[in-house]
Length: 289
Ligand SMILES: C[S@@+](CC[C@H](N)C(=O)[O-])C[C@H]1O[C@@H](n2cnc3c(N)ncnc32)[C@H](O)[C@@H]1O
Image 1 (cartoon, rainbow, N blue to C red):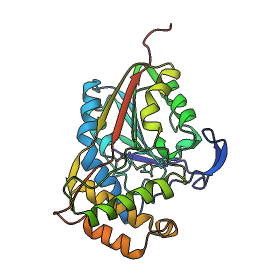
Image 2 (spheres, rainbow, N blue to C red; image 1 turned 180 degrees about the horizontal axis):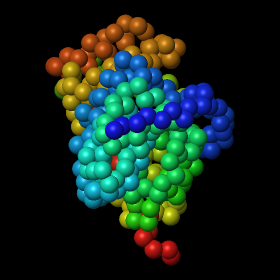
Image 3 (cartoon, rainbow, N blue to C red; image 1 turned 60 degrees about the horizontal axis):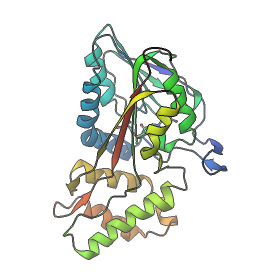
Image 4 (spheres, helix red, strand yellow; image 1 turned 180 degrees about the vertical axis):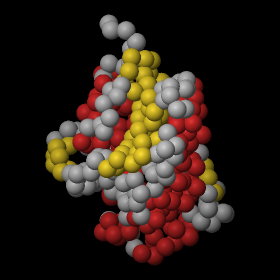
């Protein structure tokens, strides 16, 4: 049976030192995972990325008996895939600061927990996966070192985040809609996301941090694609905009801009690029060097 364990402390607004800029930063996660738009957000991520993610995990040999840790688990789709793979002799700990959409599943222990507060289970783990999480956390480098230390010898750490190559309208889209799409994305990422602590340089640098944490066998994969209005990759954008209406307005977008943007991303005649998702993985050496 699935179990849920609540280790909550009130840490949604967490002002700590940003090690990159040396300035105090509000590190509160920008989105409301438990809201209806948050549900669409995590479901769209699953639709866009699960085949890539499970393809990587499959290649790494996730199998019966493995101990898995899924961080920032969202709707739990990857945790459920892991639980099916590892069977009753394995284990899956699925961790999220907001578990309202972490659907229960046999073999998955769900933790309502803030990863800034260390891990809810000590491990060791045969695989740890964090998708679209660490880029949001100011203590990402420290957390990554903790994760590396929680791996079993030979265990894998898999991280996916987005790069600074922002989505743009696809070639051939009329200039008006293309300008609107590009401007809304630029405002969202550069004038709202970045100031709130979203790091778009991190994804391409994860390999170096994995190496510095003592891991080896480092590999990477980049994933970007065009999609038509109304498909999960486009509805994902709408879910983000709906959650950030106030800060977007403060950053210069009008309510009309946002309404037109939401119409655009549901229009099957419209097409745009996805984010560039960068997945990096590495493993803990099996022997001491
Ligand atoms: C962008 S969503 C990605 C969800 C899922 N990993 C996926 O890719 O489909 C980020 C997830 O991390 C969770 N999260 C954000 N900050 C967190 C924290 N400090 N500790 C644990 N989970 C966190 C959010 O609630 C959300 O479910």
